[in-house]
Image 1: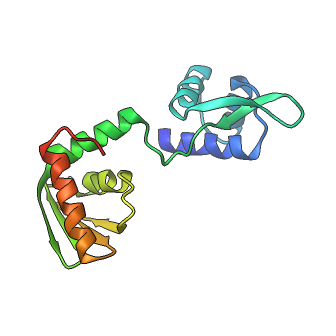
Image 2: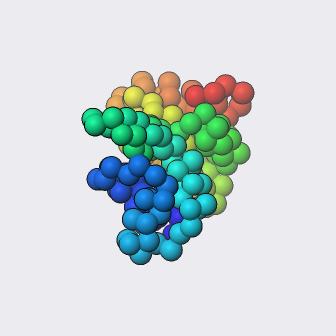
Image 3: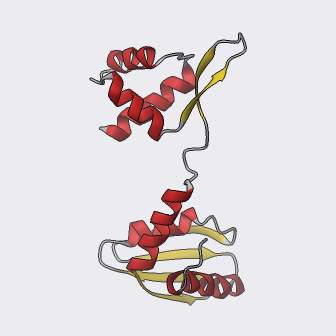
Amino acid sequence: MKNLRQNKIIELIENNSIKTQEELTEKLCVAGFDVTQATVSRDIRELKLTKTASNNGERKYTISKKLDELDVLDSRKVIDVFRKTVKSIDYAGNIIVIKTLQGMGMAVGVAVDSMKKQEVLGCVAGDDAVFCLVKTQEQAVLLMEDLKKIIWSNESV
């Protein structure tokens, strides 16, 4: 429910000039979300919404950063999950195969995606494995070494 509500908040902010929390709360209620001002306040904080001046000088809510960007704290959490759940990393040609603990494939896939490595064309995650398609075999070897360093050191992304 929280994700649906926060997605609706983003939609409302992008499509309307919303100036107050009360106005946002009202629009959410009209959209079928039973929320309080306190809930909206928490959502605003979590979504990192800010108020900026519109063309006519009035202040309105805007999205302060891309939602797919992880902040430093979230990035550290993702890397911590990566370190604690990867069992092995190997490659075949230009595909890196990351074996994980049972049920952690998706989380490790998210971790790899959040690293925003240019050589990674995409990842496919299963229950306990992630396949990363890399541009070349040489880049696969280098990336595999980088990923292993992340696991065995305190090195950040």
